[in-house]
Structures are given as structure tokens and as C-alpha cells.
Length: 165
Image (cartoon, rainbow, N blue to C red; front, top):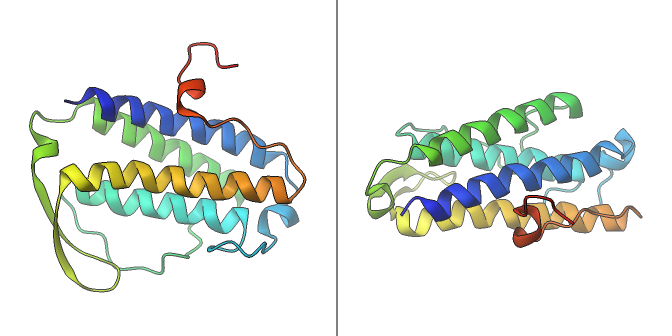
């Protein structure tokens, strides 16, 4: 049952590449402008998305991620953020390409950012992981529109086409 996760990991990478390409066309002041989004700006939202992926991947790989401010700026420089995003996307794709049989049937124990010990089914956490990515990419998509830019198409079926249109 790894196929859906492999497709979603590939979609995640391709959608992030398209989104970052669009964000690279922004001036730094535009990327950092607080537009009232949950994480303020394009830059803040992209950092949050990377942080969320870091937290969940650490948990999926069997590690513990320390509690942190979910609005933390991991990379103040956009170029460094983009490089870190590409590295994370490669990590995600590799992990899901090598997913052990039965992995999605298990549970993981972790301490959430509020400090609560939790144990959740991977049948719920894996969809949450990919949904979280889509949710925040959609926020950046909206922020691009608010900045007067044409956001890229991020529809899954379009992004996964061999020759996206």
C-alpha cells in the first residue's frame, strides 16, 4: 500500500518546486510582507511548512523532535530556505519510496508542541502529513494572489502529469 504515499511525496516535491519558482519572482520585501495569514507572510508560511515536515519526518523515522515555536524562522534567507526545502523533499520522497511493508498500519508515540504525550495511528498521521502540506501551500497560493502575482496551478492531477499544462 505504498503507491499512494509515493505519489503524494512526488506531488509534494513538484508542487513545492512550482511554488518556490513563483515565490522566487517576489522581491524580498513582498515575501516578508505580513498579509494577515496565520504565519504572516509568504516567508513565514514557507518556513512553517518546512518546520512541520521536519517534525513529522523525524517522528516517522523513529526520532523525537523537540517542541518548538511553530512560527519559527528556520532560514531567514530565501535562497537557503529553498535549498533546505529541496533537501527535505528529497528526504520525503526517499522515505516513502522505501516505506516498510505494514508501516501505515502502525502507530507512533510522540510529544506534541503543546507538551502532550500522544499516540496516533499512522493511518491518520500519514494523510495529515500530506494534507498539512497542501493546506499551507494553498495559503501561499492565496498570498501570491494578494501580492498581484499569478500563482502556479497546484492541482494534483495537473502537477503529476508527465507534461504539466
